[in-house]
Each structure stands twice: as C-alpha cells, then as structure tokens.
Image 1 (cartoon, helix red, strand yellow):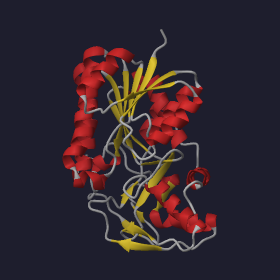
Image 2 (cartoon, rainbow, N blue to C red; image 1 turned 90 degrees about the horizontal axis):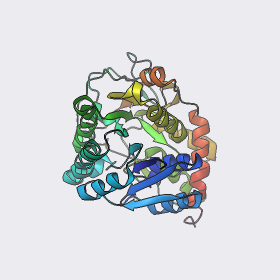
Image 3 (cartoon, rainbow, N blue to C red; image 1 turned 30 degrees about the vertical axis):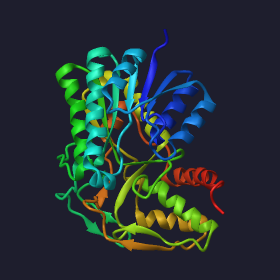
Image 4 (spheres, rainbow, N blue to C red; image 1 turned 90 degrees about the vertical axis):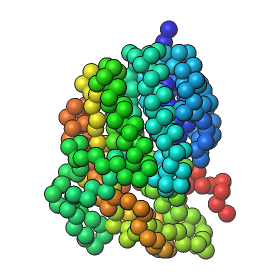
Length: 347
C-alpha cells in the first residue's frame, strides 16, 4: 500500500503549495484542515483540480479527530503547518492561540508517538521565538535597520525569548517538537521561518505582510480613488523574503534526509541578499507598477522586531539547500498571481 503524506493546515498558503508539489510527483496526499482561514476553500478547489487530494475536515485541537486520522492514514510524513498565525490575534484571544498552537501540536505529537512513531514530522515554527532581539545592536539607515554585528543574519545560537502570546505558543510548540525527538525518539525537525511569500496566500492586514501590501498596491493601481492603507511604525523594519517554492524544496529535503536533521532546529529565510524593509518593498511596488502609493503611519506594533534576517548557513550545510529565487523575480510572480486573484473583486 502506497504511503501517504499528511499535511495539517493543508488548505492554507504553505500547505496548498506543498500539496500541489506532492500531487505533481504522484504522491498520495491527505489534507487535515478546518477551513477557517481566508482563502482555504479556494485553495481546496484548486488542489482538487490538480488531482486526488483527500480532505479530513477537522481541528488539530480535537484530540479524537487527530487520533482517528493518524490511525487511518498511517502517514510516511506529517508536515505540521496548521496554526494560529497572527500576533495581533493572539493578543486578542490568547487562549484560542494556545489551543491551536500548543494543544494542537501536543495532540499531534502524542498521536504519532502512540500510533505512528516511524513517521517524519516537519514543524513550521517562527522567528518570533527570539523575541525582540534586544541584545542585537541596530543602526538606523535612511530606509532600513541594519545589524552590523550579524552580516549573514541571525543564527540558531541566538537565545530564545518568547514574547507576546503568539511567541509563547509557537515557542512552546517548537520546544515540544524538539523534546519528542530527544525523549521518545520521534523523527522531528523544526524550521523557524522568517517571511515566506508567494501565490495562494490570501493575506490579511494581520498576516502575510508581503502579499497584503502587494494587494493594496494593486488596488490603488486599479482604483486611484481607493483610500490610503496603513503601515505600522516607520517602515524601516527588515525581514528576509523566501519564495514559497524554495521553502518547499527545503522541507522536502529535510523529510528525505531526516537522519541528518532529526531533533534539530533551523532558521529558514531568504538570507541577507533577499532582505527588504517595508519602505523598500513599497518602493519596489511603486517602480514596478508605476504609481505613487498613498499610506498613513500608525504606531509600531506591540513587540515587533525591527530586524530579523535568517542566517541559513546551518540548513544550507546540512541539506545542501539555498534559495534559488531572487526577491525581484519572486515579487514579480506574486504581483502576477495577486492580479489574477483580484480580477473578480476589483471594480
């Protein structure tokens, strides 16, 4: 019997792209998703147009639903992508954030330990586990913050420092995934993401900042009378951008080479060469779309990092992986997809 790949959050941005890649390879894919995220139903329809993608509609916080799924599917690998993903939402509903990110991850780990311990588990964590990075010296430039002491970015030796309910929930889950490798011998690996972007991400004001500002820029391009959008802080906050297809390459390489990476954690992003501040991103859209964007500034977001760029040296060395899609090419592809997605809604 052919082994299946189980993807929690399989109808989300990352999950749907991963499912599509696996379907293209002829793999058997099972999606576990509660379809609560904006765009998840659209992504499900898209996946079903590509091939046989079975959906189990359920919530990772539902222990019984996960137990039934693991017993039924007996997956070769689980890509755990389900989660509450917005810091602002975690502040408004900290228990809901805990329920999805911590309880949901614990449920999955326990069901794998009890019923399918041979499966590979790849977990999607966050750079937010490092907190505000208060110990890193920053220099403010005209359009961005820089960290002169970290020319290749932030590596895994940086102390974790959970801040905000979201940082706490992702950090707790992150640590449990690693501990289940140490204590129980599960074959798990953790990736702490910077910014991943690309098609199939139905971004909101709270999550998916690159896609969100792409969308707002296109709305202003098509409708010059549209109201200005808002940005938090001075816009000099820096992140590194990793195109979704490059992220998929890394995840699948980790699953294939789990003997090299089990029980380890890796920072994962586009690296310094693919870093952008918000102001620099908006400048790119202005030049590419030939417009002058209108926006208003708000106060900085609570506990936002002014600078985070992933140092990819550890994952590159271990998996012989590196980003292949430069930020300009990736952003051009994002513009094309967002234009298509907006076509039915713009006046």
